[in-house]
Image (tube, rainbow, N blue to C red; front, side, top):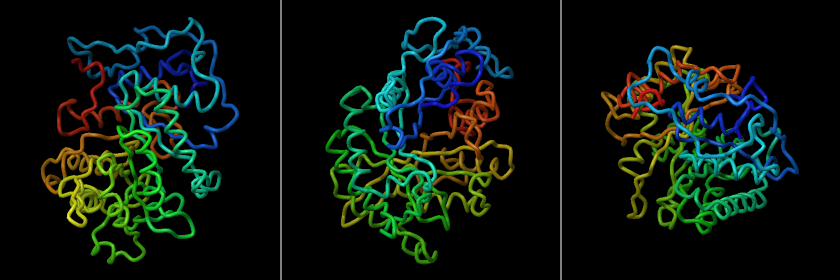
Length: 393
């Protein structure tokens, strides 16, 4: 569920469906939806049904047009085919029960053209340690996934399930320690979810390799690199465990890459230092793949989270070289495939270290971020190919 539905003065910020339309108009086609079972299995969630002024299409267009760009010939502002709701009331179409609402929201995004990434993402360990109770956590994951694809089978084809967000937060390593090992979490859960539905990709994040990579990354399997970094967790057991599995091709690597304003480190944030660490962790697995006992697989990689305020020069430098890497351009080319898929964090301004695509008023667009994602043009190689509506067909 998006936040901020109590903010602002009209449906541009107060109405869920209108917020989704604003996302779509700016060219975004993927949404990451954090959840935890403490919330999904709760007895109730807030109601956002409220009186509000329904913003006109002209108002929406005016707030979603970058003045320096203008509107291209043939540009058409998008629409959403649903929901239909009574004038003067926002969000009365949202189901009341927590699980029902979350499943409905996933389906709403998918029905309106978005790829949807439900993401187990409960926040700080001090307030939620449900993953440490592995048996009950896995049962809850199974039940959630089964209910989703049974209630809304049409989401398959638009759905990618991100299993565990930034496991480093929980001091999880690939191996078992005093807390569950990420390797066993994945290897126990993946076959069960695959049995429920074989058409859904599963996004996995890495862990335990903060000596070189961000939280959410951590797929290093090169033994020399692991041995030269004392205490680094070893991802080989996970990869070896899935190489002969029937769900191998459904596994998507979803590393997070953030700049120094988030990670508080300036090591290997640009140029060859950045490119080498990305390649040794996940980039090489997209081209050369991973091989074990005669079985090799090239993995699909999606940049599972990336974001910045772009107000610090080190973040801007990382962005330039990260874009070159994902586009496979110049000195960043080679050793990996093009990586056209990414998820930008976040829409909400309440994200403390990245801010949002919308400003503190939950309405104004942060055009610097849109420009960084678009580049000089949506088809260029100096951006990530975001294409807002005003660029036209």
